[in-house]
Image (cartoon, rainbow, N blue to C red; front, top):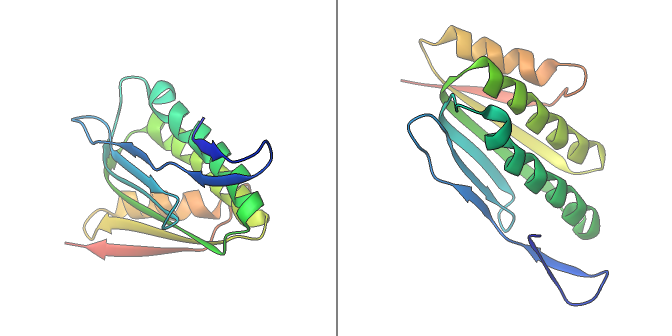
Length: 144
């Protein structure tokens, strides 16, 4: 578990969650001190479920931690160079958890970076954040 406890019910802090990028997996850097959740790079792991399972578990812990602390804002920073369909399915699960955090009173800012020539990636982000079970405010930011 990523909590440090002073008593049975009082949570002090969560540990950051970090996975370095590999050839087929993105870098993941979730920092509870700054409330920045960043995923960047290429995402087409051989087993997307296995890769994203740790991410989803950490977000469950973050949800519990935020309920105790009543944090004000989380920034989700997404910058994919490529994302395959199975990774996209798990990204949807990640964003559902973020949407649940928002529903509990936390302000959420989502930034979706995409190469200015990659309209497919732009559209994937727009569709994702507007899904009824997610429905998050977002900004799409092009780069070249």
